[in-house]
Length: 157
Image 1 (cartoon, rainbow, N blue to C red):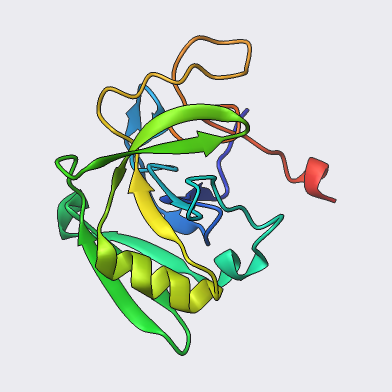
Image 2 (cartoon, rainbow, N blue to C red):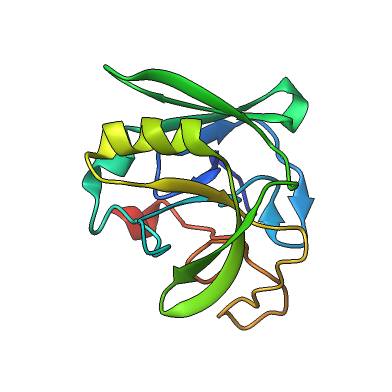
């Protein structure tokens, strides 16, 4: 029998996860999971592999899913509306070009201060159709390869 001990969502790729008591499953996985991504000035995604300070950024989806708030110790918080109407910009994820929605100068300045390097926050556009790298059909937003990842406790030991 399958039992779920914990359920996590990562609204911003590479940042801290958010513990959930329940989640809505959509075509690209859990609602809001990896819907946002931090990119450098060239539009290339930032990951903890290269930018470990991403781990100190704690995202939270508020206002019934209408707002994203980012917090980091010593840097306060910044909030953005979860809106798909902003300007499009080219981004790169694992060497492949995509289009994303830029979330504006305020979160960019905040992220740049936290990370110590010029950064922008982008969002998956509604028309995004990146196929997963797994064995099942579907899309995966800005996730590495799969829309949903299940891990057993035994595999973490």
